Structures are given as C-alpha cells and as structure tokens.
Image 1 (cartoon, rainbow, N blue to C red):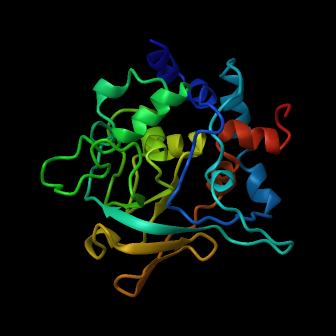
Image 2 (image 1 turned 90 degrees about the horizontal axis):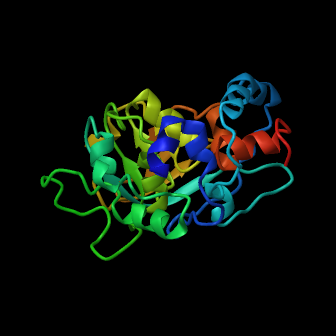
Length: 257
C-alpha cells in the first residue's frame, strides 16, 4: 500500500500531500512574522537530513496561514486562531485520533484526504458524548483542540495530524505531546502543536469560544473570560507556517523552489 510505504518514511509521507486542499473555514488567521534568522538556521541541519532521506516529488498541502485569511503589515503581525474548542483528556492516542482501519486512505488523493477529516477523533470512547465531526460531515466545527498530558501517543502514523488538519483543526493545545506526534505535526505543517503551562483541559469545556495569540503565547477563553499562558512554539513556528518541512526548505533556499 502506498500509505504504508510512505509511513515508513515520514519525510516521504509529508512530501506526498497535495497542494491546495487544506481548509480551515472556521479559523481566523493573520500572517506570522518570524524574523530571528538565527533560530531559523538552527533547524537547517535537521531539515537537510530529512530532505535527503526522501526522493519523492515535493508536493503537499498549503500552509494553515496561506489557506486562511492573511493580514500582514510591513512591521509584521502575529498569527491568531479563533473558533470553538473541543476538549479531551490525557493520553489521547493515534488510534483514537484516526483508527488503523482508515490508514488505507491516501492523503495525496484529494477525495481521500477529505474523507480522513470525517474520521478525525472517531476513535474516542463513548464517554465523549459530543462527536468531533458530525455524521455526514467532512470537517468539524471545532477548529481548536484542547488536551491534557501525552497527546498523540501510540503509533508513528502521520495520518494523525493530517486527519486533524483535514477536519479543519488549526491548532492543538495540550499539556504535553508524544514526541513523534509533535514532530509529525511540524513536518506536515497540518496543525500547530502548542503546549500549555497548566491543565487548561480542566478549565475549558467543549464549545467554548477561544482565541490563540501566537506572538503573545496566549490562549483566551471568551466564554469564561480567562486567559492562559502557552509555551512559545519557537523554531517550529516558521516550518508550520510555511506549510511543512519541504515548503520551509524551499522558502529558505535549501532546495530549489
């Protein structure tokens, strides 16, 4: 299977994603300006190694930023995400995010990428009474996921962040992440994996209206009026903004445009 083969090489999988099929209809986004070239260079060695490991053509989804409304100025502006949140607990694993039975779907095919979104978080237990994606829909009305500890644990499948991105998720805010899920989110550019400084998942409820301000590392819950500090996304930000590891490498001049 093409999907199985690409999962064996994460960079091959990331490069197989098609352009122009990543939509975040319920997300308000402005351009994120990251001017610290020294921090960008710190990723150069890692990115170069990943690119060399892949021989497939470089095609993937457009970035979260370019797929949504962009508003930039000469002095630079910060990215923000605004929408409804969906709250989950600890140890949300990749089988819950996208069960193995749907891994036959190939994200490089637009129709199958769309279907992946419809199955996002379908593996959650029955205790989650509110469905993340309504039956018959391909995208969720919840554009921001708030989780607890060890989000994305389990297998190394890159279908997990891809399914969330296909469902319209712009960012996940969790207390901590499984290392591979965090890496796959950055490599594909599908979602921003943001870390909270506390257990926000115990203070927010599914359906709350929230805003994430990346420049301020801040989550604002408009429903409750509370604000929460987030850990800075750091060097990963420009890679996700560009649309993933290959798009970032082209933008940085590491590979031909």
